[in-house]
Length: 221
Length: 225
Length: 194
Image 1: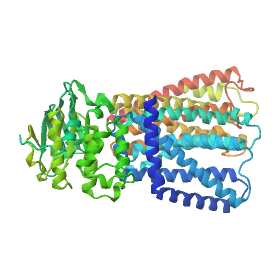
Image 2: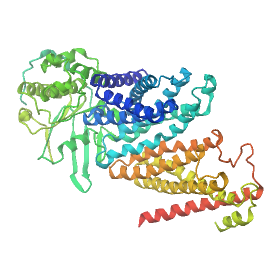
Image 3: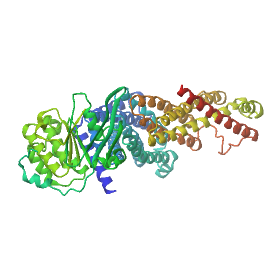
Image 4: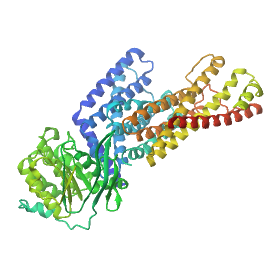
């Protein structure tokens, strides 16, 4: 167990160090997030701010994931980990955590920007809002990280296979959207007991468990 | 076999280890095709402990492909490879504790420094020998480059870092694909020194190279494609 | 199938509120049964393929996904045809309808993904896709129970009871569609061998 945590944090620290040192991907993502927020706000206004928040964060996260993954290919970064004497599921798990942190960073940028331009609070209940952001990001990261690791080496037409992964996140939209409708309820207990949120949490746990295992099977076995 | 003087006695000591009986790598009837093109067919040979093997062939013969297959970088091939009695496909990541592959182009994290790359790889492979790290850095004259990012280094210096990391990991089988490319004559000497010292300790080498770096090494066997 | 058709159009009584349009529901439920079985078999063959690397299992997974996708489309179409006279609209953002549409999009994408994966030399990846896509299937069923929209609940539920003749018709329809599934599967496998 100690070895598992050590390796996960080793890979996570390495990825975060590279990303924050290089900065280019983060700058692209910040510009995209701000632009999308502004475009959305112009068309929708401040009526559906919280939906706009999740929609903008989602699109920015998808683009960020593609950008970061493709950069790894060009630098042969993942070949190092795939050839390392460690279980590949650990690599996948570390990548999921890394991408979650990037997504949460994107959430923060979008949240700050939307709050500034709308001059309206995005949420009433902070605990509900943060929990939903966390759960939404976890499942998204699991799927995107797993497939980006698998597909990064596919050449030719296979490069477009990554776009075909996007429908896999549609179930989140159903559960996430239902939870968004409840997020501003002042009773946190009711929110946490609501079916959509519990289903989202269950979905996340399931994905976090099976994605690393599936990744390991897809590459080595 | 031509002997090299040990310019670094400390390095020699650090590489001394009591080696237990080691398994051989047995490559049996390996064939590889891409779509309808056959790269090579029914290649068989053994890599025994403490021996050096040369892989030779013209450009496009499939040398790198064969090396990657032996290093388990490519899994889509016919034939079998055994480490001792175990098929390497059944060994999963355990195989990488025994075998390491050095690609022609250095495989390092470009935005980390030399020191950070070394620390990362040593921790990933659970290596704690700090003295050996310092000794190898000295041998390859990398002291001035420790805090430099990899992308700022020349190809030769990057190659030295890759080789250094490989010898830190110190697997039983070294698969070296064009190891002498980009290296200066001093670094070539250091590398040959390390190869010979390691074979004395029971390590095996499977090397392919088109440069003249190999001329001073006596091979146990030459595998031709 | 003939018996089933007879029972649907002749034997089963007319529904009190919806009238004859309710009869499409038997077909609708039959389609749901077929796609459930097909997608479950797709999952099983995908897992088997990951373990064995046998291309025939990957092929069987693909064939099942084809049948499942077709019947999901039929479910959506039959649902729309039923919805128009009953709800006054071809489509509404009901959770059950939306999740079924998602299921269709998912498995249609799987079919494309599978072909691309095979062409790119990574057929195992489509098995991974299938396993994750299958997780969506329970959400379709759970959405009917808990995220209650305007779609009717046939089994259980507070007012979900149906007449005995209707239940008999439904059971016979299920059996008929089960045979239809096996028949289509057999035909499709033979087509592959040509």
